[in-house]
Length: 123
Image (tube, rainbow, N blue to C red):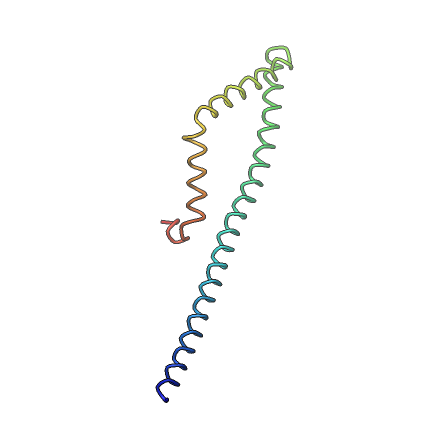
């Protein structure tokens, strides 16, 4: 009788420890997911802020360049046309090299941020 009681207590203790372990693992997984999600979201927000300001610089720089070219050739409309043509050529080049220089590096950066531990990604 005593051994059955000891066995029952051991089983209950084991069950309680396994339950605590599973709960701790679950909490750790939730915290890791929250950490990685916060890291990705903060990177995206920072990237968006930099992109907005970079876009404004590009916009006003393009307007200034177009105006200057227009003054140089005697037609402001032609200056804007030349700048638009330059952007069209740049867009065509970026479209042709998008997989190698844009798509793959972005995917790799996302995978590194999400799947690797912080210690490994800094090496």
